[in-house]
Length: 79
Length: 340
Image (cartoon, rainbow over all chains, first blue to last red; front, top):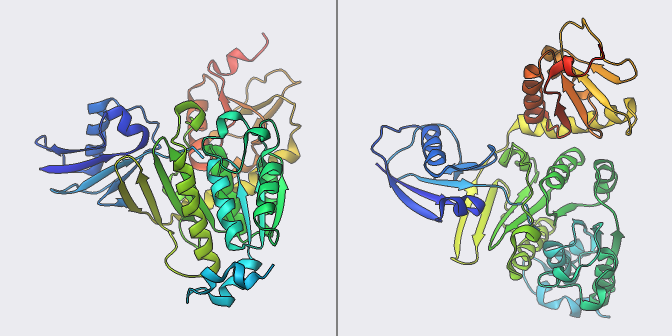
């Protein structure tokens, strides 16, 4: 199952990339599981403030499906 | 000066016309933070003829501001940002009234100032003030135009617009670290671009034209031209948290002196008391949801239980649900506080 992932702000720096396509073969079917998988994969240091969008809609629950686009959106503070 | 001629290029637009120009002239916009974003927003709102513009910032001009804060010049270094900005803006357009507030935004100040304006613009550089603007905007029923920047990327949205989603609906959990331009750097043109977009949203709100960016987060990456529009919706529980803030802060201020050391005891049974000279508020853990408004927010509050475990849980609960940022856990529990 292929999932397109986009990383923004500080998260993109931690993962070292702005986007990638991930092939899932490990039984992940829920958005929550996918988020945990990415956090573990890159050792992300967020305190729970990063928001997740699935197909451009803020959503952190539900099923993840082939072709979905998942975005990791940390808040920015600069002005 | 002839106003019609001055604004003729926008009056020509069928969506604006003379009527639209009058709406702009009657509009009142408050810009919180006169940095990279604020300078850019202010310039554009003044140029299009917004009637009254408030500028609030407690900072002085620093030499390192000049790469992006384009209302300031080398000879302004060390002067108050709001005063320098006011002078520059009046030179651009003397028909616009500028109100300058050289101070930091407190919650009380926000509740006092916001009712006098139609739209609030966020030009701040820290999370605490963004939540403060959000909560005060909800309480005073004002839309606010948000932007924030990170290196080469910017975020833009309009919150609390016609009962639309708020900042807390997008980001419910407060980030404790502020990553500012000072610490990580920023490309000079980035705040100018986002600030111009904020001005554009403010103008659309005033004129009631087009589609306001409510319920959508726009993200732009200047390096890659990557852009995204993320949809999010209003969460009534998050709006309630914003509304709760008023009661909290007022009650807190009334019952405690700001210089005193305050303790919160969350034990159900009080078999042992700490030093009687200390100010102790006693709210058992299971009553926190009903009585959290009694806890002050303007002084550090040391929270304790028997061992330090449940007080940690209480702090998590109070911070997450009600946005407390001033709670400190007494790690060793009551034992570490008593005199025996």
